[in-house]
Image (cartoon, rainbow, N blue to C red; front, side, top):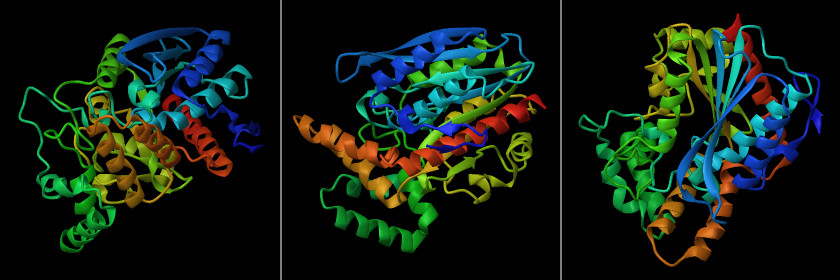
Amino acid sequence: MSLSPYGTEIDTRVFPASYAKARQAWLSLITAMTTPLRHEIYQCAGLGPDGESLLTDTAWIGDEQADNVVVCLAATHGVEGFAGSAIQLDLLQSLSKRQLNIPNDTALLLVHALTPWGYAWSRRCDGDGVDLNRNAVDFSQPLPENPDYYKLREWLFVADAGQRQQVFADFSRQYGRVALEKAISGGQYRDPCGPFYGGSAPAHGRLVCEDLIQRHNLAQRRVAVVDLHTGLGPYGYGEIICDHHPDSAGAAVAQRWYGDSVTLPLAGTSSSVPKLGLLDYLWHANMNPQSCYVTLEFGTYSTDHLFEVLLRDHQLWAAEDINDQRFAHSMEMRRHFCPNDNAWQEMVLFRARQVLGQALRGVSS
């Protein structure tokens, strides 16, 4: 244990062993809270590995008429929910112990397990292979294209990782590293078996967000969205990534609330390259100029390792009758996106407390 920005101990035991245990712990803390609270449940298609139901839980904590709202999203990318749940559990414990107070005229909206299928099965995507964070596009219009993805497509599924990495290196030398990362991870809409697939219709998590925005009239409130992610960037560091346009009101708000640590993919200052169909864009379209959306991204291992782990995941799920290999690889997915390292876990909780505290202060100021 170590001390947090609020002077209280950090207990990494909040990191859960599974989606089901995370939900159980989350519900236990929600049930015990004495502050005004509204709990809602969204059913997701499919079942977990033990036959459990897959559910997204939301909790509105505080005055339902509050002008200011901090929205905390966990498991936008399913397997990244192990860290997202830990952050929300730590936050709920701090609230219940009165070590953290919600400012006046401000509410907190927690969204737990936005992609519960991926969380339960230790995958980033949902049961249809859809990456929620590439799904916020208008499906009634021609879908965005990523032609460089198809230049590399055949190499994504070859068994020889060394051969694939050589192709990637050649592509990077010819077109640049940013072009390589955009080709692989920028988003694509024609290959359901492939990585970073944006789907052909709104996914479960998108529908949940759209319902919450409408149900709580969030477009008319001052909103700070903090979307919790892992797997990209320096080990243990929580990067505040802002996908608002650099010249926008949203970017200015983010920099005012969070300071010079804010990075912007569209300005080339982030560990993340610009991407298609981000969930951010759905929220951007429903925000007033006093609001902003940021991704709090906790780094683990290299981007090259990220690509290899994800590509192996997609290879295994595209094949048949290899459940044992899928289970073994699910442990590798979890190791990449939530290292079983006490120091990494302490860094995550410390930084999350800091950023969520900034969000609460910023939105209520």
